[in-house]
Length: 417
Ligand code: HEM
Image (tube, rainbow, N blue to C red; front, side, top):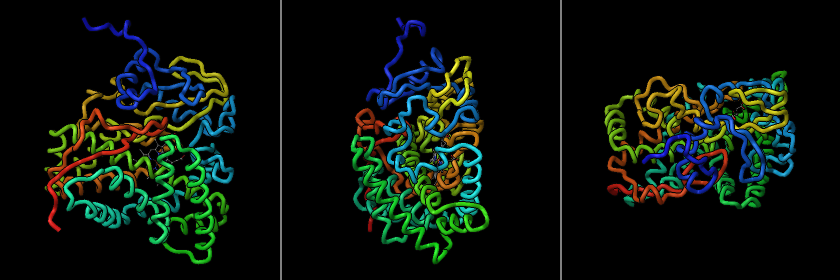
């Protein structure tokens, strides 16, 4: 006899089984404990918010600060909250760690340099990078699409956009690799990678100041030179957060997205036919649906109550951390019909995959561009692409904030040189 929901025990969170498929546990939380205080694997206590309406409210609530100094436990000093490596004081003042009015000022400055137009003009370059990466394994008939494709594409793209010279971009690939492996537990390596990236960026900003170009770093410097203030430290922190926030997220959009497509042959076939006909619409709604269905950012970044507030009827004490579970909110049946169904043509899809409110993802246009170009090109150039592993055997990264595969082995008919 099936168990009634009342008798279903609370599922364990943050185990390896949970990492492979967290959605049943999130459904349980949404239903039984939608605003739930838990102890994270790091030992920090935090509230998990899982319903769509509560998630939207929390993401836009000014009583929730992004500044870790508001955490009652001061756990940020030990590096247990925040993103890896950011304890280096000069990288702390980035968009995801600050509140208005500083946030408003920095965001306005970066928005001047990181415009949707700049991103749209970048499409041919993303296409070129995508093709070059596929060329690297097309003759082999097999590949690990995380390591050989989803991982390098966003790194080279953001390096290009920032204006990192081509000869230095492989260093960034190595440093980014050390940072992503952080979730495997090699914390020392992250610190070293961040340090090297930091000093490289400082030096690059210094050099570009003397010789401004058309790239994003030059844009950030220019914005600072027009009466508003962006110090060299702030510019370096901004370049760092653009790299950091734009890298693993996009790896996971491509990785999780492909994985979902390969497991839903009928949806994949519809998308493939549509792309081959040169249509854009299903590709665009499809990428949004992949962001909703199994998005790259499982939990939004840390927020801390600066005043007493109530979320979903639960009182949150001052100083407590709040983590909005985007992956749970985006499958809330109260907002999404057939919430567990992948429907690439879904129209009513206000997903929270890019967040909501003043910290809404500034890189969303770039992420959409990369996701669309990557998926369309793979489906066109390798039309019989298929998974070369048992889906249950694939390993997921164990990080708290991000959700992504460690590897994605595929096979396809080898292409003639
Ligand atoms: C599919 C890929 C991506 C996803 C799913 C994603 C998701 C998100 C989410 C959920 C937030 C809000 C976090 C919060 O409120 O706690 C965010 C913020 C941000 N994202 Fe993205 N992102 C992606 C790609 C990018 C790219 C490519 C860039 C830049 C190159 C970028 C730069 C940023 C920045 C700078 C912020 C902070 C904005 C602020 O605090 O005002 N992201 N992103």
